[in-house]
Image 1: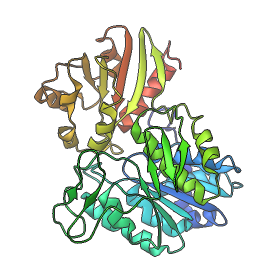
Image 2: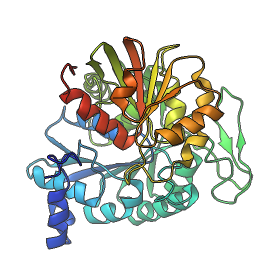
Image 3: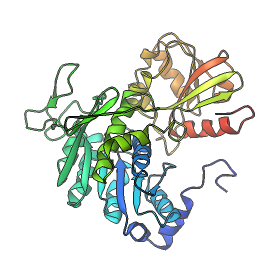
Image 4: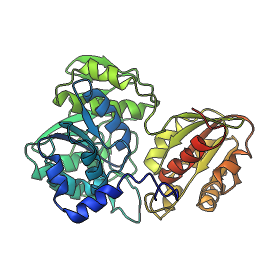
Length: 395
């Protein structure tokens, strides 16, 4: 029914019914499996896909590849494959504690923490404090954590064993002050990633580091020839490599498997619609947009699509923290269910644009040829479904 009315893929209803009938189903389904949980604000889906690809070099892997990352989605994924003894599970950061308590993970990957879904999520420091509880509660779990994110470091210090990864994260707007004491954090020069506080909280020495096209660990340089664009995806891949190595995957074997991924759930996919050749990008919050702007081709027309449904967060005030001023002089169309909110923000940024609610109608306002499309969560999946089913839509 969900598929027929266009509300979604129907991937979680089985899990929701199962939990209603059997509240302990999650722990029962996870019993006997090695489980890796991947959480954080941005990059969960991509990192879990990269990690699952690496682990499959050693055997079957269960993975909630659809991105349904709350308890009902996790139950549905586990129930769909009763045989795989290794599971890679993407988990919403606000649900990590409950899922970890049920599955007793071997590894938790903690990517980053920033503002997201402002009507649902707490202030970032509160989220970090909440995450510290499950990390401390599982002394046998190894935590792979982002050393460049002060919020992550503060939370992960509660873990019994931590593997630190320098991902090269550039977003710092949510960690201007120390999460431990509230004082202003000190940061190194622009080309340094060091940060520290006078209270003693400081960036830990990483065991893994991301370079432009490689991972470095223990003096070994592992080339990364990803098809996925952007330095942030190199960081995601290094986090996945670090987690995979804990489960016995040889570094270069894992890197080679990751290089086979052309896109992740449609992210970065190329689609043709009519006379337009579209590249699809997902950005759902200011931190994600900071990385996405660097992927946009100079002067290429841009379609931006924004919704504010439950899965996006109803509050669109996050748009004001996105540096749309960096878009420069290019044809821009604002679309989506909240196109008007986006249009106001673009106007204040001084970006000439056209506002058209329907994204496909918005494409008609752009010249034929290549177009970059950036959409937030539900807008991305909604538009992608329309593109791949529309006449002329092809990969």
